[in-house]
Length: 540
Image (spheres, rainbow, N blue to C red):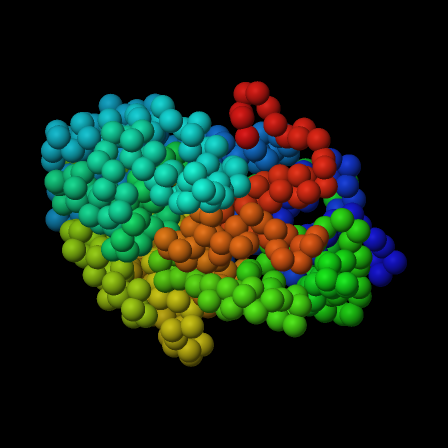
């Protein structure tokens, strides 16, 4: 390997790095990926963490971008084993007193969403369906935003992010000032029903949108009306998506090196020229190096501040991760799937893809979020849960079920390792004790085995810094053409030939491959490659 030279080197085998590399290879470049772990995919992976035969997607779960993702279409990933289902009942909330649940259905069944919400408020049902339909009608604009580099400021438009936010308000027919409010205020403006507010609060948090930070109204709209209830289930586990992406890369001629940690990005005469691995091996790149590793690890660690200007060093140090995108996960191997008290009103809640359990009021969701944001383990152990074995029997042995759930949690650095081990040992039991008030069959006898995945685990294993699945807080000063900071938002660094392609870049985290795709387009522009990826049908 030490004698090899590549046109391009990708640091980190996350799905964004694979995306950039596969397109570059299709363009005729010789590309290699160097991955620290034993396999590629990073957070897109599946684990038998509880018991043999029980599959758990501990991190990436909802494949909401499959209809738009260029990589999935261009490389025909379905033929390589990445196949998905689209459950009918998409998102729901159930209640401990057994009152009617609220269930939001997929795009083919907006009438059922209307019926479910109308149990509480016809006005809210009308509003929800109207906004969801408008979002469906403008998906092209949303996908163009996702898969294009952010518009840079100029004299005519000094704040294109604000312009885009106001444009989405106009598309949905909402007052422009909603864009400047918080997710909570927008949801409260639109809907009067506490039960629906509680569900939408939790859905907003799940997609990285803090509830009470100002200027997040547009992000809440995108999370609730564009991304949510568009969720697909990857058959056989989300790892099948990662495996298919790797196979697509191999088919294009990419070379993959696992258990090959990059320690340094080599800079010579002010240009990135290759990498040095942990074992001392040096590998050269004649055209570009791109990093999928986290921002501070890339710039402050691998490049080194001695190779950065004072401005870029400061920008990298100031970049913030968490608290709004920090998750912990539970995995439960079960004899029976949860049977909710609220199912007597609508049995579909027992087969809802994403089910919020543990919260009866919006105030409880707010209390839970405030705990996590100030570094406390939430006193209310509620979660967003999924039981994938209800739709795909490969997730569990015959007749059994596999449950996972996400908790919004404090940043990894807020607790010591010993404290996180205590959380691991106790929080599942607290969750299950509360769970039984909503689903009485969730007794200890129903649980075959359990596992808890802390933010520290995610920080150390998947390098999700602080457990932040965006690898960088989604805040007004770290979004769009400010992400990760203004001087780096076009995926280029101040070091020629060195590019950034991780989830700390636009459009952010999630299994969308957007940062990798946008970074490739910038690399291609710089190298003068023909834009073969453009199609008349897609437009991006």
